[in-house]
Figure 1: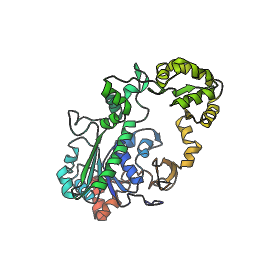
Figure 2: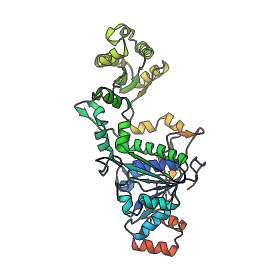
Figure 3: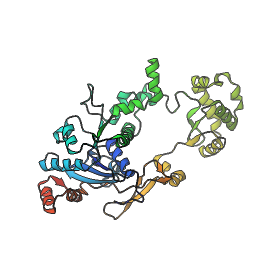
Figure 4: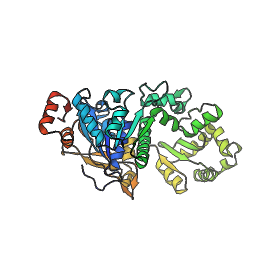
Amino acid sequence: MSRERPGPLVGVRVLDLSRALAGPLCATLLSDLGAEVTKVEPIDGDPSRAWGPHDGDESLYFASVNHGKRALALDFRDKAARGILVDLVRSSDVLIESFRPGVMSAMGLDATSLKAANPRLVVTSVTGFGSVGPLSNASGLDQIAQAMSGLMSVTGASAAETYRVGVPVVDFMTGLVSVIGVLAALIARDEDGTTVETSLLETALYSLVFQAQKGLRTGEDPEPQGNMHPTIQPYGTYRAADGDIVLAASSQRHWRWLCEVLGAEELLGVRKFATPADRVAHREALTVEIEARLAGATVEQWVVRLTAAGIPAGPVLGVTDALAQEQVAALELVRQLPTPDGMDARPLLAAPFRLRGERLPIAAYPPRLGESSREILIELGRSEVEVDALVKRGAVGEAR
């Protein structure tokens, strides 16, 4: 792997034993920050390698959260594989896992064994519901967390028609939270190492912010408001002549500017729209008034007029149109990476932040299953003959 410029975590070694999205995303972001990440998978691979969408035989789901890693495939039931894992623990700074309780112990990686192998190791665990409580042994998935946290209850057209968020947002947020925990642990760790724990349920609940605070303080359940902000108006999606536009007038000043741009100054004198609370209470009537004016021009025309007046606004875009925006190109968010066979280059999204004014490089394209197995085992001191024997008996997998 090569980097355009070393990141702040250069020299940090990460052992990624996680699956699906949250843990792998955490590991990939650490790679983007400069860490050396080794992904260890079972012989048949991380299950997400089989998940769609696909481009030919490639899982784009897997590709989205596994770039910048080396890949080692092991039969975890094999005694030799357990020895390899312990050797990897000894040389790692961070271990990321997302197994159910008891699985790590069955692999010979219980807390006592980990501490004996590497006292300074940062162990990062991602679970569905946390390590304590009646659901600690239950499997957790993104949509289950969305449902059980209340996130689905505030997402949708109405209280009678709620939806999940259109991407695995809880998995994504849990990956980000895990990165924060790892970075804090690396800063604070001493000779005793440390552990970082989070869960999909905790992250989903924390993401509810003011909606959760409303439930805590008032005992009332918030309800979904479709594409409208629940507590600020006008703020949401409105129909223009040729499509939908999102605009936000979050203050009295913005409200006045909006009325002026729309040519609807008379609304400033309407009592039921006088205050922010009034506009929320009369959202439907306000929407009718706004859309009647927006019907006179296109989304593009309104975006120009509104943003020129200092009112936040933007079009509702599909994913491909969103990625094709000039602003995305200017941010250099999309990177072309050579595939493992070196025969092609394909696009990937880089980490969504800059350091020293520069976009972080991506170390390498997502690896094929077992792509670096032989290289990693040789580094751990196994001979070519030993690796051949392990591959032959199925304890180790290599890329085909």
